[in-house]
Image 1 (cartoon, helix red, strand yellow):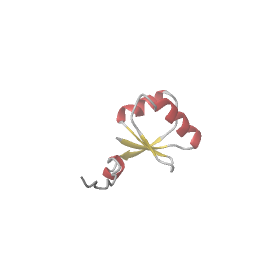
Image 2 (cartoon, helix red, strand yellow):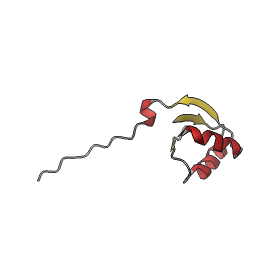
Image 3 (cartoon, helix red, strand yellow):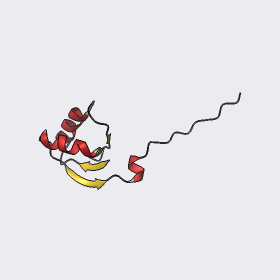
Image 4 (cartoon, one colour):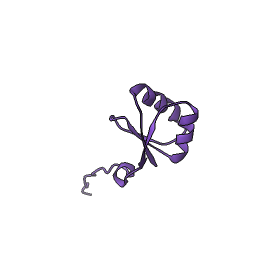
Length: 73
């Protein structure tokens, strides 16, 4: 997974609309998005401006942990 950033909210919204249903991704409010490497070429062909920040860090790529309360039988 690769971390990318968009120059503005319009670019990010456009990317969200085009990636949905095609690729898995994670998006954050700060303008960053985590996408598979194959999605980079797709976004470029679609004409969406973005910059590559680099490979994802473990914390960004790991699923969110949820605490589950134990239920007594």
